[in-house]
Image 1 (cartoon, rainbow, N blue to C red):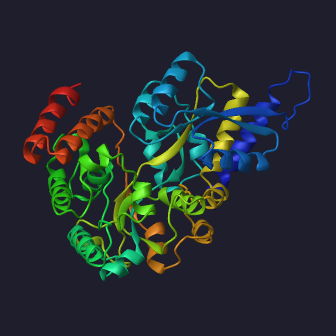
Image 2: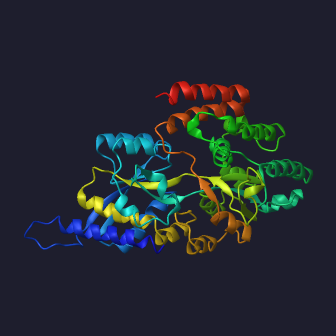
Image 3: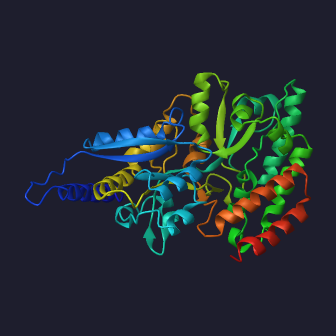
Length: 433
């Protein structure tokens, strides 16, 4: 945090200078002149992070009001692109992941915020928003994928719980043993649940496989991960892709209602699970967090750093915002990436971009969060690779691979033909553009 403070101070100073310059030449400068900036968000009634950040910043900068503008969560990027083109977009908007960052940046729709970013070198995921040495957004949260597990179902099935040493073979064996053990004990839960997101397979494969490169167009690294998923489906150790789609299964209900003993999901689910335990949408049971299963033993164990994936979530500034609004927005960006905002986000179960000891203590101080050492390790320590490397080809490749994901797991196309088709399409439809 010591290196992050200058960015906030610098941005705040810039804010004062710009506001001072807004008056007439003969008028005294007023660095405390009120200013309102608008911030994009979605599902505001159930997603408190935006209001948390707005209120926290306003408390530190009483002259700046952050006004929220709500978008549809599912169609966020489509709506934001339209508003930017129409000149009606808010002053600050969210980059949900890195998939469309290149489109926004190359289209001139993000202000250069290198001056603010200069004091945020301690924020691990900041570099994801740099192009040609300039920074165009600042991360405020950094979710990483981990393994959630139901300690009570493990005990019921008489299966040893995760200890931080698992490879994917260990995970697959546990999923099968859990399914058998739970059934023998009179239960109906499956050992695992793999949601329909392409990330559940492709994100891990890209992050963990040595030499894997999305932009190369060589997708052979996906094969062992899909083979494992197909095997678990066939064994009944997790619901099939078709069942999940047809029955509209949700990962929240599968784990929260104890229909599955294990769930691979992003750290954002912590906040959801805590909230649903209170509302009754999730059962109350003993649960924990473990590192995601690893490619091989070299990154397992609590003395090593497990490899996982997860794009940062960032904030960028609309270049069409006024000068006073831009200055206030830069100060806001400096705040959201720092420790104070991080503690505020952790206080509602969100994983911020900068995880310090104080941030971890805040999150694990929440009622219902597991207190075991492995859960604390899994939350705080990991090598998180980006899911969407910044490139003009990323969106096209990911859209194509989403179709591949459905084709393989639904059984409509065999694994090898599906990978071959994806590679040919990548070469002929995306990478040649």
